[in-house]
Image (cartoon, rainbow, N blue to C red; front, side, top):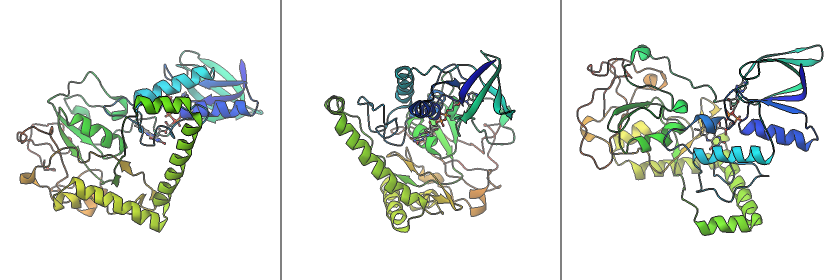
Length: 360
Ligand SMILES: Cc1cc2nc3c(=O)[nH]c(=O)nc-3n(C[C@H](O)[C@H](O)[C@H](O)COP(=O)(O)OP(=O)(O)OC[C@H]3O[C@@H](n4cnc5c(N)ncnc54)[C@H](O)[C@@H]3O)c2cc1C
């Protein structure tokens, strides 16, 4: 039976960081278990249109592996995945791929770990590091009838690239960070209806590509890159204060988000629907991630079918109460008004008249 000083489970950012930190302590005897066929975690699994980080790229990486070649302020998902592959190769980290940890128990002074997949069997370890990720398992909402929906249906973390979405009517459920990235992309060519339960605080995202000259400067001057990273870190910390309850910082950030909303949405009724009723960065007393984009809502809003703001009860419910209307957008910018649409709450019979929702 194999014995390792440490077994790390997961080969995403956290797993790679754990190996590097262990080696820095002189611990070399480490086995990394990864259930998938390649490393990268989040950045391997999320391939939806527009996927990118929303922490600036030069901060969203390992300090010991700066990357002067990030294409822009917020790197795309495929670049981040390639970066992780690069770091693993540079550090000679070779996870046991396609080898899930099935279970582990502490017994007689050692971890006893059972593995499956490509290397089924048992191994023991003195210490076990779980770097399995927090968002690893897609969560599909429990919507009655979902299983009988006849069209393609998938979670954003398992994007089905074979699905023909150009010109299709697409319902997107949720206004989380992934929706904020993918809806503007989808709305270029598809007729998108967005189902919002809880509006999000959205601040403008200062994204832009780096020029070749900037990339060359970063490559030639690692010290300048390190300074940029420090600056981004300080900015990030200041922003964190606005999320974690510092009243002044939160008020300033809230003002930025509201100004952004006013700039983007002229219609006061829609603005009301899009304005969160919880404190900036805090929801029910918990830290709540804010979103950043310049393109939200992503397309025009149909005045003639203005939805009424959902009731507070409906806002907190996973399903709309009968008669509730929901915020829905949008159709490709530049196109004429969309044909009549009748989406209900992701109904299994999309052609039927809605009983619980009103389309924009
Ligand atoms: C679309 C998206 C954008 C994001 N953007 C940002 C951002 O800008 N900034 C930020 O800070 N965070 C962001 N996050 C959060 C992101 O998940 C983390 O930053 C980070 O990538 C998590 O890394 P991780 O290693 O903890 O987990 P993961 O990346 O989820 O990796 C976990 C790994 O463990 C493996 N695993 C799980 N169970 C087992 C098992 N039993 N046996 C073997 N292997 C197993 C998985 O296959 C996976 O490879 C984003 C998340 C998403 C989904």
